[in-house]
Length: 379
Image (cartoon, rainbow, N blue to C red; front, side, top):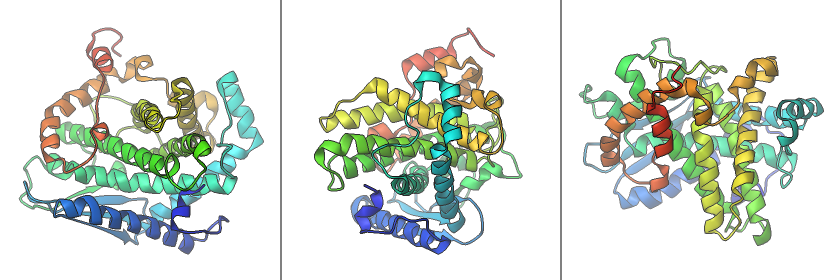
C-alpha cells in the first residue's frame, strides 16, 4: 500500500543513506518527467530537477521565465533534506509507537485521541508513506512558487535579471527580512503551501481512491491514512525550516517564513475540506467530523514530536497545538497584515499563474476575514 509500489516491489527495511538518495531521486525524477511531458509540454516550457550536495536542509526554486512567455523552471533539493526527511519519518513512527507517547497523548487529549498511526499500514509502510509524502510535498512547494512566479512578485520589478530564485533556507538566514519584503515573503510561502498540499492530496487520491494499489473497498481508509501521515510530516517540515522552533506569531512581520504553528493552522482546514471533497468525488462518505479530528490529532502529534521529542514538556508546548483561527485572537494582527498584502498581490499572481486547479490558490473565507478585521479581541 506504499506509494513506492508504483515503481516496483522494494524492501521496506530501514534504508542506508545512499538508498534514501536513490529512492528520492527515482520518485522526483519520475514526477519531473511526467510534468515535463504533460503540462510543461503543453505550455511549450521546460522543467528540470537536480540535487545539491551541501549538507543543508534546503530546497530552492529557480525561474528564468520571461514575462508573458512559457515557463522555464528548475527545482533543486539537497540530498541532506531527503536524508533528514527519511530519518524524521523513522523517528516519528517510533515515537508514535511508543507506549509512553500513547499515555502522554491520552493525558493531553483525554478521550479524543485515536490510533497514533493508521491501522491500514504496517510500521514500515508508515515510514515509507510519510517519507514519500513529505518529499513530494517539498517538491510541490517549490513547484508552487514557480507556478505563481513568486520570485518575480518578491523582486517587485527591482531586479534587472530574468532569473529569480527562492531559497527555503532563508527561514534561518542571517539577514532578516523586514517591511514589505517580509510581508510578501510570508504571504507567498503560505500560497506555495496551499499549492503543494492540493497537489499532494490529488496525487494521493489518484493512487489510492481509483488506482491499482488497493482493493476498491479499502481505498477510502488507505487514502485517509496517507493524508494523516502527510499532516504529521508537515509539522516536521515546518519545524525543520525554522531550525526546530516555532517563533511567536507577532507583528510587525519579519523574516522570510511564517511560524510553523501558523502554517499548520492555515493548512488544517484546507486539508480536511479537500479530503472530504475528494472522497465524495469518488463516491465515499466524506465523514467531516472524523476528518476534522484526524487532522487536528495528526498536526498536534507532529508538533508534539518536534517539541516533546526534544525534551520540552507538554505544559510548555500545549499552545503549539492547533485550535482553529477563530480561537486564536492573538493571531489577528499578523493575519490582518497577511490578508492585506495578499489582496494586493493576488491579481498579479493570478495573471502570472501558469497552471493549476482553482483549489490550489490560497484563499480566506468571509468568516475568517470578518474575524480578522473586526475590532474586538485584538491582542
